[in-house]
Image (cartoon, rainbow, N blue to C red; front, side):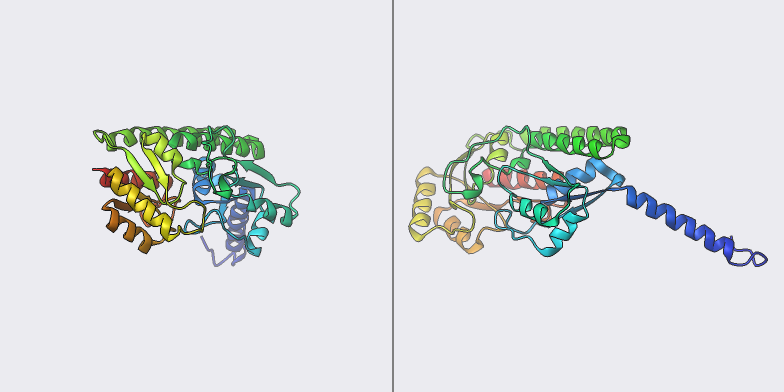
Length: 296
């Protein structure tokens, strides 16, 4: 407390001590840059208060066509670790890493060890397989393990702390995994159409059958002939559900849905891509609810 007899010096010294202690703790935090919000969430879940995390994408952008900004290069220059998905999805971050000139940077591919789904077709970002691996909680666990290994490499003293956080979050993901089957129980017809071919891992986990995808490559809208062909296939096959996403053209999906009489639902490909997707678990629950509503 302030003492008039001693003046302001003791009080100012105490404030300076607190500020210095806070700055020291902040400086000790591992600075991490991720390419997408889901990776940021995973890093925060494992790293807790010992990490400072920035995601270059915020959730509403197209993952395939993202164009890095000068501010992204500055962020990578100041980072200790960069975490990317890999499998060709966010290869643009390699240019950012090179431009940053950060020689001490640790670059981690979160997809290492995941059973990747092959993805034939015209999609140039899927030449190494389908990169949207986080739509299966089991893949999320692999990604979290890769992040954990990077954190203990950067800060061995925090291994116990990181391990406890990792184990706690993986337990929550196991509970989430049980919910997935319960929400779709009793549904026999599991055939769906997708707008963009990015849902392979979710569909595999839910035992849903993707008959075809309307968009053949990111950013290329289907032709009138392709749209007519899709509508005819949906009608003749009596398909009930089309899986869309925020980046898909709404008017086009509305037309296909109206003409084919199939329900079109908007799924969340990323945290932040729809208001309900505030975190990874919330995003997964939202997607499952939308699919279940469409199929029921």
